[in-house]
Length: 296
Image (cartoon, rainbow, N blue to C red; front, side, top):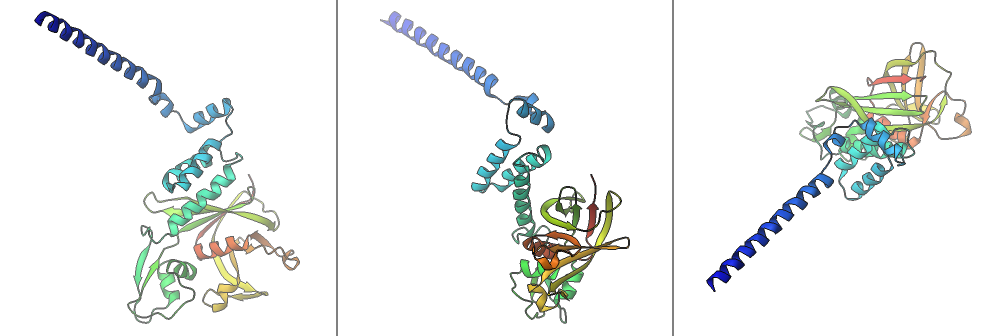
């Protein structure tokens, strides 16, 4: 009986050893077949793009679809990475413009969110201070102060009041060949401007410029109602059509809202959607850097 038990124990041990060996073998095969290929991870974005195009993928479409899924799941940081990939690798693809638009919305929401105080300050109102003084000292705009603090109008200030303020260190790139105005935000850590958002140019009402790139600073900002100009401190400014202006040599160039009316067809300037001009007027202050690209 003891001999039989010994044989059974030996047989069971051999079976266990065999099972363990088979498990290790299959695990090794599984890792070889399904583990990420390190060489693939080290490939450049351009090489990945070439491979996708070679096997018939619509450029950037899979990344775009995944980005939309991530947005639905509120995983905005991961979605932003996918959209950045499309912008860097497939900028001219069919989904490129929409990916850039969505990326801009995510970027701007993050920049302006009061939950993100990394680029904002809390200003305590001092005796005798007004909105204009606070905006000037903090390199921001009245529009931005109203937006960040949920103000419908410039209510009376009292010493000790606290306001959220955001220094506006944006750069505008007016890209005429691509018919868009690009907004770049200053990255204080890396000391460089990074893409924030862009706006489509509806039409251009100005003569061609001789040259490719021009640099200037925003020098004018006002609202306009029936041809009359209102400064940002005027209560009527809030309801006016916004205008931004800068000089290039002896020329003065304006960014205006396109109302598609017969009365403004002979006006000179660069015309954007009225809603885009409202947003830009909040983000752009006098002194912001402007670059105009007139040719490829």
